[in-house]
Image (tube, rainbow, N blue to C red; front, side, top):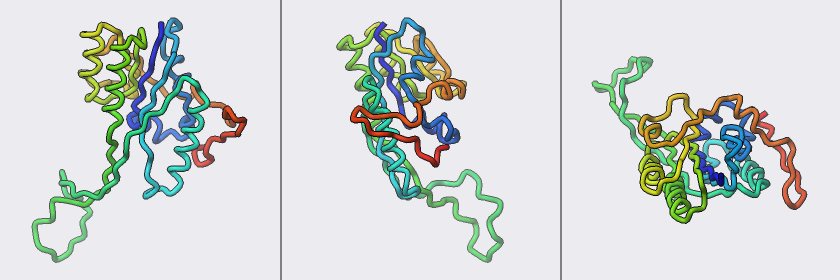
Length: 219
């Protein structure tokens, strides 16, 4: 069965990879093949992400580009870019920190703090749009979505219940969002061992023969 995987890169990173540097060198096509049935032929992997900022980590954009270069060595993988917005915003405190210094300042304490907020724009819309378009154009027999974003419930429901094509959930969490479970045709939960079994070789080589090395800071 022709199978297309749609990967929410933001969800994948923060749910599974951010605290596991040893498995960040992830071949997402191999991961899909590890999780899916042998009858699923992965004909396309669509990876949705955005360019990271170097504001907090000056080397982060370079490391991301190395990983994108690694993904480009797999013909079935295509990368679709949204945008990251990094901004400073005020946010309300749920409970004021107990470690505040005892200063003679006006009471009560301020109930807001200023925080750095990272937002990804466009990726979930792009993923949903491509999932629906590919279903309408009969570009797959089975789809799989790697995410735990409840914003994807409605496009998945349309594909499964209206168009009549199965959409599986490759879940980056042990307990997926109930609404995603409800509309998905099947669920595969991603384990650390699945990630470890789906790594690129290091080094690997591009189509032009160039050598691509896993960033040393990940090792």
